[in-house]
Image (tube, rainbow, N blue to C red; front, side):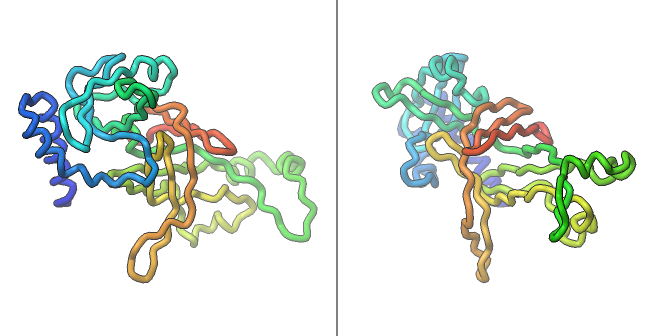
Length: 249
């Protein structure tokens, strides 16, 4: 709780520095972000959106410190690579043009990315060992009353939190009797961490050791194809997944 309050205070100081004419004061307020935890090899830059942002310009103060930068985001917007319109004080990630560091190739509004993202799943008939299995044919033979009772949708998803924390949405108790019934649901991804890496999102499942330390056991990588206030579209290597925001921020 104290850390959350402290982070909020620092964010307010950063916003105030956007309009300050005292560059030394800006540097002192942003030095605390110099240890921003980014993954090795990540070429994105991170900071806060300042007053003066438009559809073609992003006024941006980097966490590494210094004066606010004015970045041209028109090409990124034209190419539909601005994910979430930045508001004053929003945390932003940017991929800059290799030859012109005043031009952004991609902009991600991290504040818009945080929150609860969900989608609905339907079960399939459970396959019993030793029995012939033709799912489509068997479903047709099920009475409507049983089909309605068995094939109920479930809400799956994840919540993206501050400090790269995540938590799954849709967990069920192992004692849920429906898990031993005639149908089975897809496996739920239990993401506990998330990061951005070169403009892509990394969603990681973790396992806690005997000392309580979380260790990454698997990571899914996805491109952000769409980010709106109520919609997120992620493009994984083998499929696309559309999410709706469960609770509006």
